Image (cartoon, rainbow, N blue to C red):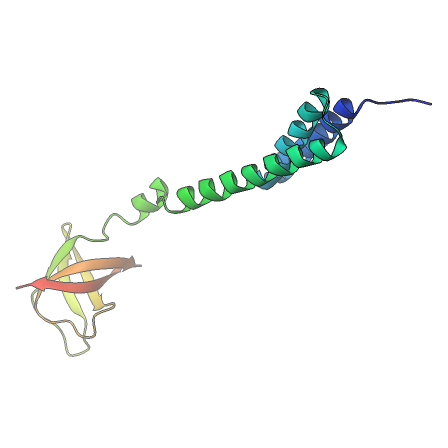
Length: 146
């Protein structure tokens, strides 16, 4: 009969979970793999099985908290590619007159654009903030003055 030490068993489990993590790319499996490695270290240090389980559980919990903090930090950051797609957001444009249909023809960046109200209810002559670009139309947000 083949006997395997608990330390080796923990490390094999950690390696298997790490291999699965490489295919699935979920950071939580990485935390589980690190927890299993902590169980292996606890077994190598001579702790009994309950101590090994406790070390594994504590490492998994800390790893999951670290993943949550990292994901929250990363999700709040705007991607550079999205910022490049929305270069016009927040810029100012002057509306000289508004047509009967509620749209305005404005000159922005050397080109003629159709401007329509976004979060604002009606366009009036004045300086407006660009909320977004919808195809060939500028969607205007709030009025900034005359």
